[in-house]
Amino acid sequence: MLFSMLFCGNFFGKVKVMHALNAIALIGLRGSGKTTLGKSLANKLGFSFFDLDIVFQEKMEQTIADFILTHTWEDFREQEKQILFSMPKNNVVLSCGGGVILKQENRQKLFSDYFTVFLDVPIDELVRRLEKNALKEQRPAFTKKTLQEEMQELYDNRIKFYQETAHLIETNFMQKEKQLEHIMDIFIQQLEKTKGE
Image (cartoon, rainbow, N blue to C red; front, side, top):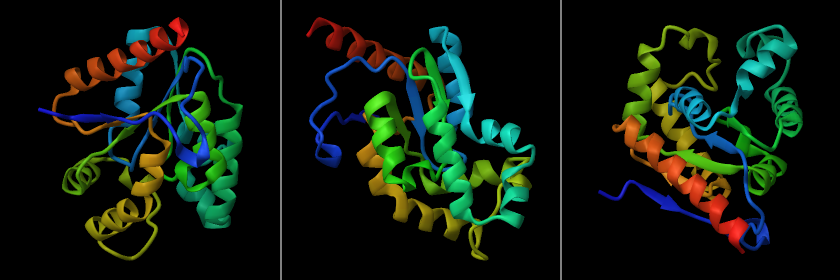
């Protein structure tokens, strides 16, 4: 079964990345499994792991939901950008917030400096996961729509940004071990191929 697509090049008018990408960034909507998969990847590769939402909360000493009560979403996105740009570019795995790709500077940064993987999970599965999540009250809602409607709208609005930022689009959300192994294999292949050029 085909469960991923590899994209490498010509986004933002750039040619294919010609240097080795020695770090991984995971992008996708909330509930797509970025943190769980990221920790496993980091453990397997011997890399450090950073969840950018957790880094934000530690920096600001409050949850994202609490921050939004007294600030705007644009304030949050600016803080998120600063955190992304402060991250190491070698031997790390990043789990990025779902909206990190809304800023073009972030998309360019991720594509240029990280082997970026888009975890493309069906909306029904995302909703199922989020409804089971005991911490879901910490995730601020964007609208008064149902979770299903909200997630579908976010997906429709962001899919082009996820696709243009990703080097790899991963859709095998049901087989975690195969997903992990496949991402590692492609990541290592691009390292070896680039070093050989």
